[in-house]
Length: 57
Image (cartoon, rainbow, N blue to C red; front, side, top):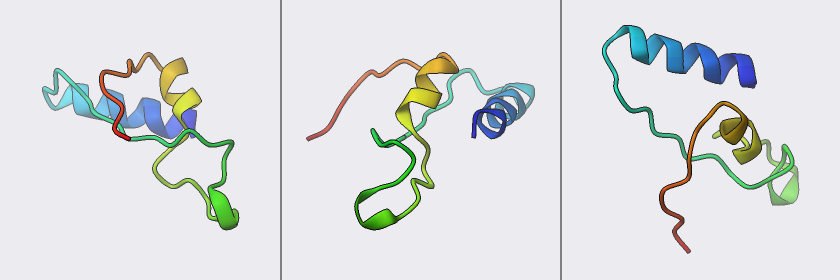
């Protein structure tokens, strides 16, 4: 997942993006019921340098 995230950020930057948004889940790889977290896992985004700016309830 980290390689895919890095590639997406690099691609966005190569196309002129100044900001990249992400909406990962606070999960350990799976959501309740065993569903995979396709939107990403928050820890991977944090490690890649993303910063949380808002958390909705």
